[in-house]
Amino acid sequence: MESGREEWRSKTGFVLAAAGSAIGLGNIWRFPYVAADNGGALFVLIYLGFVFLIGLPLMLSELTLGRKTLKNPFGAFQSITPNTPWRFVGILGILTGVGILSFYGVIAGWTVGYIYKAITGQFTNVSDPSQFAVIFGNFTGNPLVTILLFGSFITLTVFVVTGGIAKGIERWTRVLMPILFVILILLVIRSLTLGEGVGKGLSFYLNPNFADLKAGTVMQALGQALFSLSLGMGTMITYGSYISKKENLVSSAVSVVSFDTMIALVAGLAVFPALFALGMDPGTGGPGLVFVILPSIFDQIPGGLVFGTGFFILLSIAALTSTVSLLEVAVAYLIDEKKMSRKIAAISTGAITFIVGIPSALSQGASDFFGNIPFFHIDFLSFMNNAFGNFALIFGGFFISLYVGWRWGISKASEEIAIGSERFGYRKMWSFTLRFMAPLCIVSTFLYILITGNFF
Ligand code: TRP
Image (cartoon, rainbow, N blue to C red; front, side, top):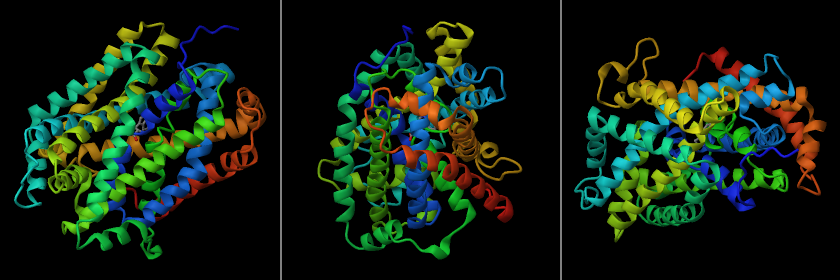
């Protein structure tokens, strides 16, 4: 049957686009600060465990569901098990996409603002490294600037999504991600040569202390693994629906997971030595961490202005290939199920996301109310980050693993996986981790949190 659905142009096109979705602010902004907040190395170790035990099997499952059904997450569940409650997992995924994009777009707006700051030399020859925290605070405390930047970023995302899959997304990722990686390596080298404190930073980042174990840390590590890989809400179902039948799903999943994890680890290697060399306290950075640390490293590099500018341009683009994938889920749903045109779907979802995101934009200094919301006593952005970027993804990931592992079933899924790959060497491991490890890890993490009451 000829589906007529648009497809990625090539093998590398798909892997690059999926890696483009996965690699973004999650690796470079979120990973270092969540790791810092959660005590460093132990968090990193648990995160890596979850990437392998839950991330990889889920990645393969989502891609397979998507390529089999050629649908958005809602349509994917509908086409295999029509009118069962499973379809609500798809709906949850679509809402989660909007929830994540609403705060992710705010941070993406910051990266654009930082291009301007870098290019106008605001990060060079700063007398005292603590100034970078002041610069950041003044920036995010300005409501007009942050909302405008956020709005522009959402508009840009709508623009790319309207252009369609192959033309819109693939083109961006191909050349630019390798350059981002090169600048990151440069940052690592400079960070590692900042002198006193570097050793302490490395040990904080790489030498786990098991006495630090807390339920909150385990949950954050699980959330981070899913967030970073764009899993748990059907992004990879949607992207999988555009992969051709000729492709090998297993090797695609392995490549995306490895690229993504490597970038996060390298970003941490740039941040932590510098953090300690600058004499900062790791737990106090919060969402601003990399916006304070990275400019201070650029300030210490010859040609820092050029590299700093380049870095924030590339980071904005990395964020864009991720925001595109977040918006695409709801858009694919509206096109497939509601027969909307791509343009109308993208514009209306973008508009809703913008409205939902305004409190997040105001929560980092511009509004006292959104800076410390009632009941939760955290800022609105962190609340959204936890609610959608951790809980909803973990919830979604749980049901997707049960669905593919038990309901749709390993043997049906394996038939789809077999198309395009001669050998499925990872099958036994996949089946075991998907059916048992993933659901068990998720349930035990939740129980652990409930018992200790340690939610955030
Ligand atoms: N993974 C992306 C990042 O690390 C963000 C992202 C894109 C995402 N699509 C997603 C996160 C879907 C969760 C779910 O920046």
